[in-house]
Image (cartoon, rainbow, N blue to C red; front, side, top):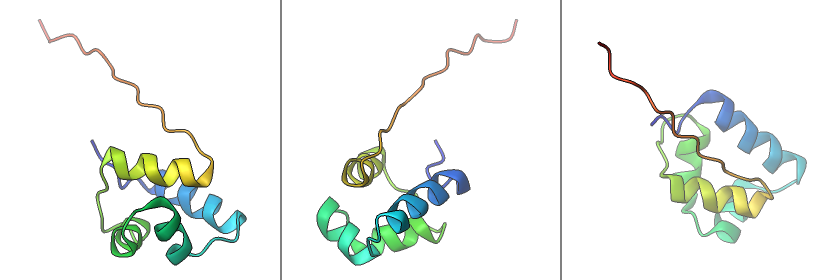
Length: 74
């Protein structure tokens, strides 16, 4: 699973900026390391689902996971 999707990064950044929250404050409030957050927002990190959940919870967002059932080729 690719967690560094540009759309996801943009969503987190836009929400953080709309709330006028710095990376430092978001890291502190969410319990996510500042380095982890900076790497994620720069597109260099690959955060875990748990990290994304912490960020989303802090920003008032919801993480929904969809698992697609793929039938094997015949």
